[in-house]
Amino acid sequence: MEKLTIDDFKKMISLALEHVSARSDEFSALDAVIGDGDHGTAIVQALKAVREATDRGVEFKTMLEDVGFNVMMQTSGSTSTLLGGFFLGMSDAVAGTELTSTEVLTMFRGALEGVRKQTKASKGDKTMMDALIPAVEAMEACGSTDIKKIMRVGADAALQGSLDTIQMKANFGRARNYAEKSIGFADSGAASWACMFGSFATALESGNSCD
Ligand SMILES: [Mg+2]
Image 1 (cartoon, rainbow, N blue to C red):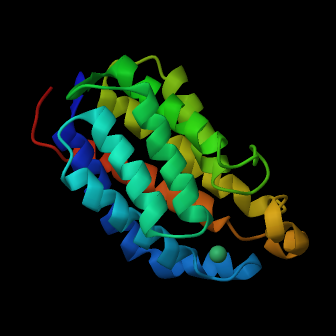
Image 2 (image 1 turned 120 degrees about the horizontal axis):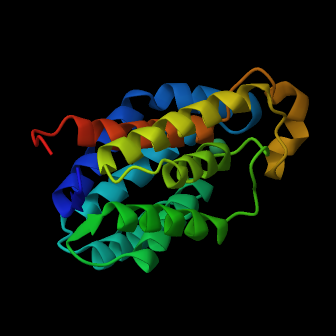
């Protein structure tokens, strides 16, 4: 797969909403270990806003900007702020109606930079960054020009990153107060973002194209 089209991107978002919605209770239960237990609801609400704006998209830069603002305005809390930063960062990085593999990497690097404008959390703090940072780094290190492969490598790294949070102590925000209690449970945000990346990869693999 050498080009990512707007339709491909719409499929990625659509499947992410479907898969994250299906596991929403699990993400809320993980959040309840050290937080208010609303993460499943929050991420589903945020992804609905993402999908609504993606559905009307015709060009990457304007669509991603619309997505970023839509998710930030329609929902509240850190989940929507982080997702908003993710898509606004993508919008800063790319333009056009289809992206090469290099541009896909640029888009995800931009997404990470966009999230970094919204949080100071870094790898090891037991947050969604433990899924996102390894995903983007693995995609860049992958060396393939096959976008399906790049996305799967990113998804696998996000999943591993999410599993790695199980043995971590929460080290960020209010969750820090429950640091010891958090050991033994994955971070809810890392788990939901890994699910999102997994959906992105699966959406591309389930296409009918043979390239
Ligand atoms: Mg919460």
